[in-house]
Length: 394
Image (cartoon, rainbow, N blue to C red):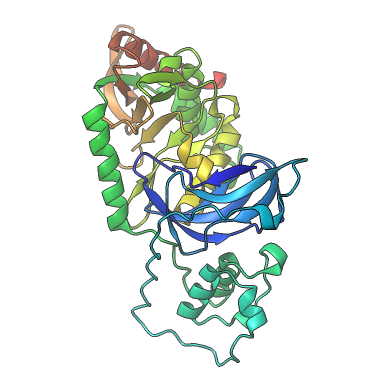
C-alpha cells in the first residue's frame, strides 16, 4: 500500500487546495492518469499519478487546503490484497483550513427557474461543480455527468456555461497571489544561486529565410514560428552540455537524462508560468510547434498538469514578440540554467570583408556557478548559435 501525496508544483508552493477528485475509491488507475484537481497560486492544476493500482481510500475532502507532501489517498498496488476495513486505522488528516469561496460576480446573474436538485443529484455532483453552478446559475438537474460513476464535475458545468455564451471563469488564478509566488521564488533564487550571465549575438538571417521558405508551401495552421527552432537548438545542445540540464538538490547537482524544457508563458491578466515540453530533444519541429500551441492554450485556460510544472530541467524564455533586444533571466530553482532570446532585428553586420544589413538576435544564458562555469557557458551559447544557423539540421 502506498500513499499518494500532495505534490510540489514549484519552488514557491507550500500548499494547495484539493478542488475535486476525478477518481474514486475502488477505481483502477494507471501511470499518468489524472486523478484530482488541485488549486495553487498558479491556477487549477490537474494532478497525475505515477503508479498503477487501485485507489484504496481517499483521505482528503474537496475544499481542503493541504500542505505539500501530506497524504491525499492510499493506493493499492497491482496484485496486492485489499485491507480489511475493520483492521485499518484511519490515517491522520493533514491540518487544513477551508478554501475561500469565490467572490460572487459583480453583476447579478440571471438564474433559471428550476426545481431544487434532488438529493441523488447532489450526491453525484462534486463540490467544485456544485459551487460553480450555484454562483453562475446553472441547473444541475439538466447536466450529464462525465466524472466517476456519472458524477457531475466542474468541467461539465463549464461546458454548460460555455453554451450560454457567458465567459467561463478561470479557476483560482489570482494575479496578486501569483505575483507573490513569483517574487518569493525569484528572491530565493537570487539569495541562494550564484548566478553568472553571458550573452551572444547570433546572425539568424539564413534561419529566418529558411523558415519563410518552409512556411510558403503550408496552410496557416501548419506554419512554424521561430520559437520551436529555438527550443530544438537548445535541447540538442544540452545533450553535449549536461551541466546545464538538471537540478541542484541536497547540496549537489544532479544532471537529468531527459531534456524537459520549461517554456515561459505569460498569462493574460498578469503572471507567468514555465511548464515543460517533455523530451524536446527528440521531437520534430512540427511536434514542438503543436506542443507549444497546446501548452499556451491550456496555460491560459488554467488547465495545466502537475508533471508539466515539477519536472522542467531547464527554462527557455523568449521575448521575441515584445520587441526587446535581450533578457537576463533569473534561474528557477532547483534548475541551474535559463536561456533567453530577444527580438531579431536588422543590424549592420560584417560578412566577409563587407558590412551589410543582417537579422541579428541576442541569446543569453543565466547559469548556476555551482554546476558550471563561464568557459563552458560560452561554449554552450556558441553551440546553440551554430545550430540555429543550420536550421535544416534541427
